[in-house]
Image (cartoon, rainbow, N blue to C red; front, side, top):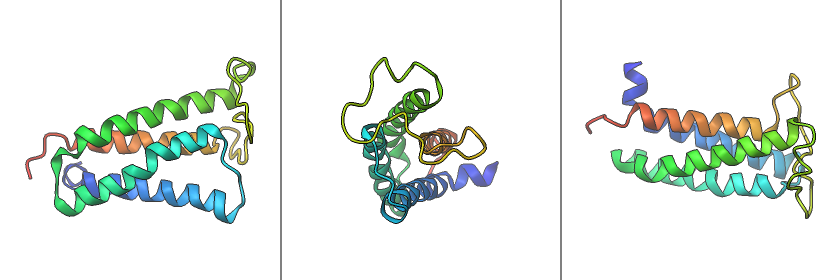
Amino acid sequence: MAWVRRYHRYLAWLVSLVAVGGSLYFSEVMGYIPCELCWVQRIFMYPLAIMLGIATYLDDSRIIRYALPLSLTGGLVSVYHYMKQKMPGFDELAPCTQGVPCSGEYINWLGFITIPFLALIAFILISLLLWVGRNQVD
């Protein structure tokens, strides 16, 4: 656990890079068109990759003040999106009105792993890694 605390920014940055790479793979290589909520999740994840990279390079422990709110908010959007996919009737409360329906599932691995679920895991990991390293003295 000590090495996680020591390298928390590197690990959080790595998670964000994998998430950004995954989203670009799904849209640019596989041809999956992002829905409205996928775009919102991207709005929260893509800056994290840049911010965490800069904070890692500069060894800036203050990044938690800026990155944690983005990560937590992106995670909430992912939870909402996942609920729209997996809870019957939930999509009718606030349906996506343009483009690809937010309740659609391009992937459904093991019956529960969808793209919003993958984004949620990334946001949770980033948040936890930032929280674990919050008191580290540089």
